[in-house]
Image (cartoon, rainbow, N blue to C red; front, top):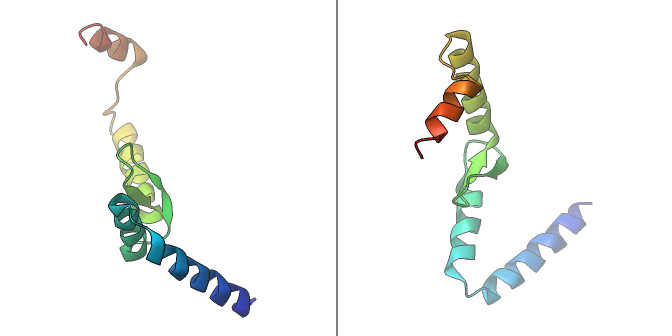
Length: 83
């Protein structure tokens, strides 16, 4: 299996040398430089969200719910009428 990983890395290196799109390079660098854990997803702008950041956001949401800092569907419907 270790040889398979090495072969995959070499293939990626070869492909990287041919990439001309700066945006793709930026995204790859972002993924590689992520020190806070594996990428769990991406935000609407295409920026990666780490697993730890996603967990932190979920915990903050749970605290907000426990503290009663929520909006009802009715409140959101009223608010959306002004959009």
